[in-house]
Amino acid sequence: MRRISFSSTLIVGDSITRFVANYSRHPVLCKPGWTIQWARQLLLWESDRKLLVHYTRVVVHVGTNNLERLGGRETAKQLQELREELALAFPTKTFFLSAVIPRKDHLQEEAFICSRLTSKHGGFFAKALLSKGKVKGGMLKRDKLHLTLEGAMAFAKSLDGWLASLPH
Image 1 (cartoon, rainbow, N blue to C red):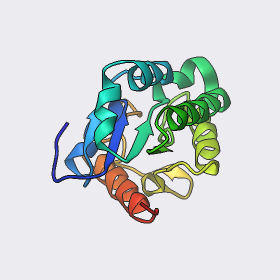
Image 2 (cartoon, rainbow, N blue to C red):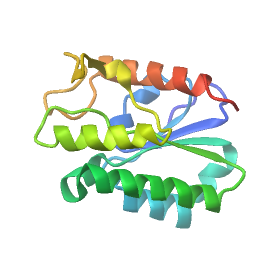
Image 3 (cartoon, one colour):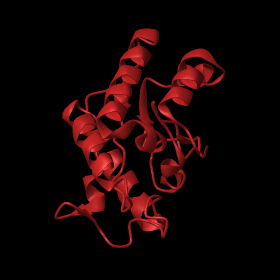
Image 4 (tube, rainbow, N blue to C red):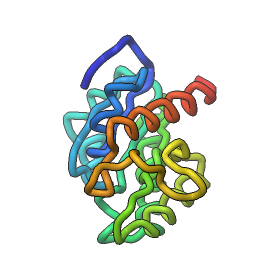
Protein backbone atom coordinates (compact mmCIF):
# COMPACT_ATOMS: atom_id res chain seq x y z
CA MET A 1 0.00 0.00 0.00
CA ARG A 2 1.40 3.38 -1.01
CA ARG A 3 0.46 6.54 0.87
CA ILE A 4 0.50 9.81 -1.02
CA SER A 5 -0.92 11.90 1.80
CA PHE A 6 -3.32 11.29 4.64
CA SER A 7 -6.78 10.38 3.48
CA SER A 8 -9.82 9.44 5.49
CA THR A 9 -10.75 7.03 2.69
CA LEU A 10 -9.23 3.60 2.05
CA ILE A 11 -9.70 1.64 -1.16
CA VAL A 12 -9.37 -2.10 -0.64
CA GLY A 13 -9.85 -4.66 -3.37
CA ASP A 14 -8.83 -7.57 -5.52
CA SER A 15 -6.14 -7.55 -8.22
CA ILE A 16 -8.11 -5.05 -10.30
CA THR A 17 -6.95 -2.37 -7.84
CA ARG A 18 -3.23 -3.22 -8.18
CA PHE A 19 -2.22 -0.22 -10.31
CA VAL A 20 -4.99 2.09 -9.10
CA ALA A 21 -2.67 3.00 -6.19
CA ASN A 22 -0.35 4.70 -8.69
CA TYR A 23 -3.04 7.21 -9.65
CA SER A 24 -5.49 7.58 -6.76
CA ARG A 25 -5.37 10.28 -4.10
CA HIS A 26 -6.38 7.60 -1.58
CA PRO A 27 -4.39 4.67 -0.21
CA VAL A 28 -5.10 1.31 -1.84
CA LEU A 29 -4.74 -2.11 -0.28
CA CYS A 30 -4.64 -4.73 -3.05
CA LYS A 31 -5.48 -8.35 -2.23
CA PRO A 32 -5.06 -10.43 -5.43
CA GLY A 33 -7.48 -13.34 -5.68
CA TRP A 34 -9.87 -11.83 -3.17
CA THR A 35 -13.41 -13.14 -3.17
CA ILE A 36 -16.39 -11.80 -1.26
CA GLN A 37 -15.92 -14.56 1.30
CA TRP A 38 -12.25 -13.68 1.87
CA ALA A 39 -13.11 -9.99 2.15
CA ARG A 40 -15.73 -10.83 4.76
CA GLN A 41 -13.28 -12.99 6.71
CA LEU A 42 -10.40 -10.50 6.60
CA LEU A 43 -12.33 -7.29 7.19
CA LEU A 44 -14.75 -8.58 9.80
CA TRP A 45 -12.87 -11.22 11.73
CA GLU A 46 -9.13 -11.08 11.21
CA SER A 47 -6.09 -8.82 11.22
CA ASP A 48 -7.22 -6.37 8.52
CA ARG A 49 -10.03 -5.29 10.83
CA LYS A 50 -7.41 -3.23 12.71
CA LEU A 51 -6.52 -1.42 9.49
CA LEU A 52 -10.01 0.06 9.22
CA VAL A 53 -9.58 1.98 12.47
CA HIS A 54 -7.69 4.74 10.62
CA TYR A 55 -10.37 5.48 8.01
CA THR A 56 -13.89 6.86 8.07
CA ARG A 57 -14.76 5.77 4.52
CA VAL A 58 -13.86 2.46 2.88
CA VAL A 59 -14.37 1.52 -0.76
CA VAL A 60 -14.51 -2.26 -1.25
CA HIS A 61 -13.77 -3.59 -4.73
CA VAL A 62 -14.35 -7.33 -4.80
CA GLY A 63 -16.50 -9.77 -6.78
CA THR A 64 -14.34 -10.30 -9.86
CA ASN A 65 -13.30 -13.72 -8.59
CA ASN A 66 -16.89 -14.69 -7.70
CA LEU A 67 -18.50 -14.22 -11.11
CA GLU A 68 -17.60 -17.61 -12.59
CA ARG A 69 -19.10 -19.56 -9.70
CA LEU A 70 -21.98 -17.29 -8.66
CA GLY A 71 -23.00 -15.33 -11.75
CA GLY A 72 -23.80 -11.62 -11.86
CA ARG A 73 -27.00 -11.45 -9.83
CA GLU A 74 -25.80 -13.59 -6.92
CA THR A 75 -22.45 -11.78 -6.82
CA ALA A 76 -24.26 -8.43 -6.63
CA LYS A 77 -26.51 -9.78 -3.87
CA GLN A 78 -23.54 -11.03 -1.83
CA LEU A 79 -21.72 -7.71 -2.32
CA GLN A 80 -24.70 -5.84 -0.91
CA GLU A 81 -24.84 -8.27 2.04
CA LEU A 82 -21.12 -7.70 2.68
CA ARG A 83 -21.61 -3.92 2.70
CA GLU A 84 -24.49 -4.27 5.17
CA GLU A 85 -22.42 -6.55 7.45
CA LEU A 86 -19.52 -4.11 7.40
CA ALA A 87 -21.84 -1.19 8.20
CA LEU A 88 -23.25 -3.08 11.21
CA ALA A 89 -19.79 -4.08 12.46
CA PHE A 90 -18.37 -0.56 12.04
CA PRO A 91 -21.24 1.89 12.61
CA THR A 92 -18.95 4.96 12.60
CA LYS A 93 -17.65 4.23 9.09
CA THR A 94 -19.20 4.51 5.65
CA PHE A 95 -18.68 1.65 3.22
CA PHE A 96 -19.05 1.89 -0.54
CA LEU A 97 -19.00 -0.86 -3.11
CA SER A 98 -17.03 -0.55 -6.30
CA ALA A 99 -18.77 -2.57 -9.00
CA VAL A 100 -17.03 -5.33 -10.90
CA ILE A 101 -15.37 -3.74 -13.92
CA PRO A 102 -16.45 -4.58 -17.46
CA ARG A 103 -14.43 -7.30 -19.13
CA LYS A 104 -14.03 -8.91 -22.54
CA ASP A 105 -14.28 -12.64 -21.89
CA HIS A 106 -16.95 -15.33 -21.47
CA LEU A 107 -18.15 -13.61 -18.26
CA GLN A 108 -18.70 -10.22 -19.90
CA GLU A 109 -22.49 -10.31 -19.60
CA GLU A 110 -22.36 -11.52 -15.97
CA ALA A 111 -19.97 -8.66 -15.14
CA PHE A 112 -22.38 -6.12 -16.68
CA ILE A 113 -25.32 -7.61 -14.75
CA CYS A 114 -23.38 -7.41 -11.48
CA SER A 115 -22.17 -3.88 -12.23
CA ARG A 116 -25.65 -2.60 -13.07
CA LEU A 117 -27.13 -4.07 -9.89
CA THR A 118 -24.29 -2.78 -7.70
CA SER A 119 -24.42 0.76 -9.11
CA LYS A 120 -28.23 0.72 -8.87
CA HIS A 121 -27.76 0.35 -5.10
CA GLY A 122 -25.45 3.36 -4.88
CA GLY A 123 -22.13 1.68 -5.66
CA PHE A 124 -19.38 3.11 -7.81
CA PHE A 125 -19.17 2.06 -11.46
CA ALA A 126 -16.16 3.03 -13.58
CA LYS A 127 -17.99 4.52 -16.56
CA ALA A 128 -14.69 6.03 -17.71
CA LEU A 129 -13.71 2.57 -18.98
CA LEU A 130 -16.63 2.48 -21.42
CA SER A 131 -17.58 4.01 -24.72
CA LYS A 132 -21.04 3.33 -26.15
CA GLY A 133 -21.59 0.50 -23.66
CA LYS A 134 -18.36 -1.33 -24.53
CA VAL A 135 -14.94 -1.39 -22.95
CA LYS A 136 -12.69 1.20 -24.59
CA GLY A 137 -9.58 0.02 -26.37
CA GLY A 138 -6.44 0.13 -24.26
CA MET A 139 -8.27 -0.19 -20.92
CA LEU A 140 -7.73 -3.92 -20.38
CA LYS A 141 -4.66 -6.11 -20.62
CA ARG A 142 -4.44 -9.05 -23.01
CA ASP A 143 -6.13 -11.27 -20.43
CA LYS A 144 -9.28 -9.15 -21.11
CA LEU A 145 -9.82 -8.75 -17.38
CA HIS A 146 -7.10 -6.70 -15.63
CA LEU A 147 -6.58 -2.98 -16.13
CA THR A 148 -3.70 -1.57 -18.13
CA LEU A 149 -1.94 1.46 -16.68
CA GLU A 150 -4.21 3.63 -18.81
CA GLY A 151 -7.24 1.73 -17.49
CA ALA A 152 -6.02 2.04 -13.90
CA MET A 153 -5.57 5.79 -14.38
CA ALA A 154 -9.10 6.15 -15.79
CA PHE A 155 -10.52 4.00 -12.98
CA ALA A 156 -8.68 5.97 -10.25
CA LYS A 157 -9.62 9.37 -11.70
CA SER A 158 -13.25 8.31 -12.01
CA LEU A 159 -13.34 6.85 -8.47
CA ASP A 160 -11.61 9.88 -6.93
CA GLY A 161 -14.10 12.18 -8.65
CA TRP A 162 -17.03 10.07 -7.49
CA LEU A 163 -15.72 10.07 -3.89
CA ALA A 164 -15.18 13.85 -3.99
CA SER A 165 -18.83 14.32 -4.98
CA LEU A 166 -20.07 12.45 -1.88
CA PRO A 167 -20.62 14.07 1.52
CA HIS A 168 -17.92 13.29 4.10
